Length: 185
Image (cartoon, rainbow, N blue to C red; front, top):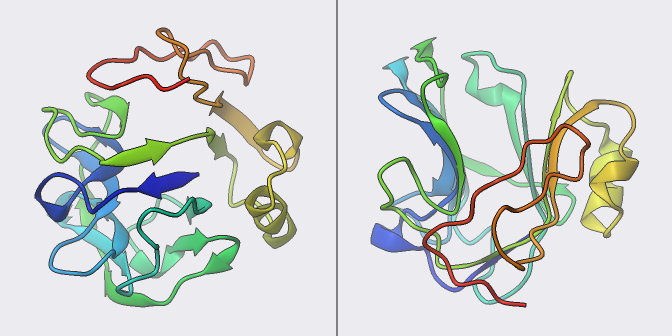
């Protein structure tokens, strides 16, 4: 769930990123107007950007993205409130760089710029392929990520905002460290 106050620092605020020298980010894209997208560095960067104004500022929206890990941009799917968006940019990648050295970050990138301006709540990651259309709809209507059983839950952070560490409720122990943010309870 995301509640953007604006497009974030430099109009390219990150929702999520895993990047060091190479890696990926889910963020606002500029130029664009409230255009969210996904980019992964490589010999040619993989980029998939939603059309302008697919997310509304100052309103909670359910954001979900699936990707099969390939270099084909059309295999990145972005959903807002359970509906797949239309796209303005679809650029295939080549020789995608490893994200292994990067830390997983919510609301910023590896150097602490491109910060998200707004709120992010209830974040989950699955592996083992894309979740189903009915699961995407159920999640956008508020079902707990713990109830998606078709894939392996890697991490689930409700982001209650009570402090650090932020507990991982998936059972995998991927607790997060909260830094550089205001905790709102």
